[in-house]
Image 1: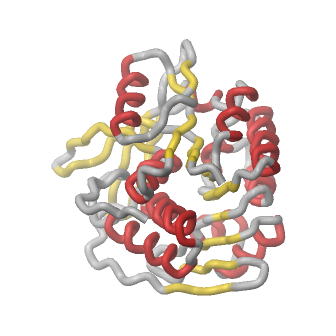
Image 2: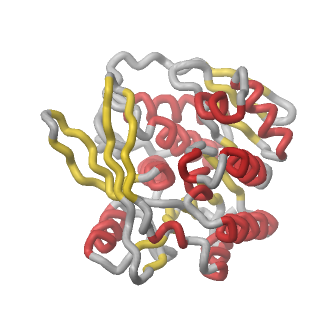
Length: 304
């Protein structure tokens, strides 16, 4: 398997509260957050690439410079005229976050319009990582191009990881979201849902029910996150539950799931050890939620 982790999705301008009614500008987004933490978690033997689309304006250039500075390969990023990058603002209440978005002209909505470029990028990857937001921002035609390219890449040996990250506001309707997410999950080696989303939008009663549904769709391994509750890891022949250590100083849960996914996948790609992978994911997520913003400066190396 090539040592290239390819994350695909939308990187946005993030406005994160700093206290006292002020905000700090940064760059983030669910798949970008995961790529950023994967880069921190894997050795330099691995290339970590990010695929998106941006404009030709100053803020797009700043974002590219940020990604380069974070050690992410940016050679698959497309540049489009008359487009820019989206923006979101984090709103916090007792450590829980909500978001306000401005993304109607986001270039990332067009990232699957060039099927050749998309397939070329996927064909270089050892693991392709994407989310329900990646799919939700695309046109219906773009989604099918994306999934067809993913299927072809997996036939050539790539593995795929998917966080359903269910956000109905991005989709035409809830049933389209459920159908597309289920189709995507069936093409993946790792599906990493958050139970809160699955309960709300699929009506699942337990994390095990979520795992069963995604296994039935054709996914190989399901990792169901559930906040401070047990993590369920299920395959066709095995099912385990893990209780993360409690985190008492929760400041901001932004990127909790994204960082968990990053550390889990980074550890699993190296060791193949499920127990160690869950422990790594819980440890990193527990660190991240004690700080503000999606991307936390990690002073100690977390090299797998």
